[in-house]
Length: 138
Image (cartoon, rainbow, N blue to C red; front, side, top):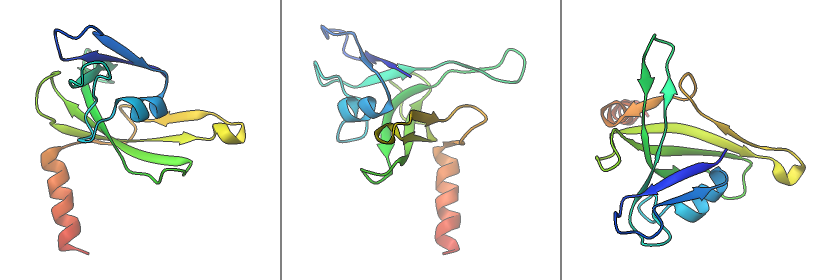
């Protein structure tokens, strides 16, 4: 699965960039603050997604703004979190929990696990509630 990233700098000579897969996306485009960064001008970037939901006529149109990797570098299973906003320049409003499995070294495939109906997408408020529950019940 390839990714098309758009630069937020209107003066950038490279308006869009591509990553061939999730591994390349993380390696090349994720900056120190976990947001996507344009390799050309160092401005933030985003990925636009569209999903048709099961409810008639309903869609989910998130803007992926960055990735927080959570796994150990050489592990096959790599959990991560997409940082999501409702518009390309809005604040991060949700966290989308995902993973990928990279078994290409063993002759397998690179598999991405996500999607509506897959791992949950939590608002910041929901995540704070979850953290409070975990901290109250160690």
